Length: 264
Image (cartoon, rainbow, N blue to C red):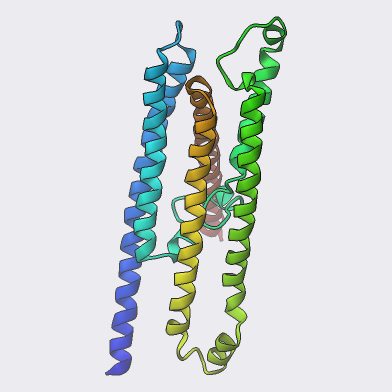
């Protein structure tokens, strides 16, 4: 009876986890579709001539940033039900998984994105800038802005390292004394031990996701509305391009494996 009850409870947990995974997968696809629509709007605003009013650009920037905030709010809600799926996501590609940090993208990567896009836009309009012409993009960051970005970058690195240490501590707990004792007893009591570890993993994810959205908002807050549009374009382009490449590569791999299996 006890074994049957335990099996039923375990199956219910599996069914719930599967349902949560499918729901978040669907949510993520909607997020990508909306991100693609935002990218179209951002590109149109960046290339429009004459430039749209600053107030219109600011509203567009706020709408895009709000979309990211909505994503992390939804992610937090789903993580409360099943934290494990956030560290083994089915909605990302194996290529994207290579660059995962604490359940998502590494916040300091946003600064590398900013510097890279700024450098590319500076090089493209260097002659105009040397002639004293002002460009409405990231190639025209002021000294004050660069100093503010540097300060935010340093504080982000510090917080990121602290979260990394907390995540490492959670991972190392798998070999703690209690776990070794449970393993020696054929896993009896494993669920109770794992529950605490999942709670600590959830705490790490919450801190990491807060740093991710805070980094986006922090960088955007330093930029003017024209520059923010270009930064958000670069962020969306990079995310969508890597996701598309990764999915296509995974599909090709699966197709090749299926073909090999069929031949065998």
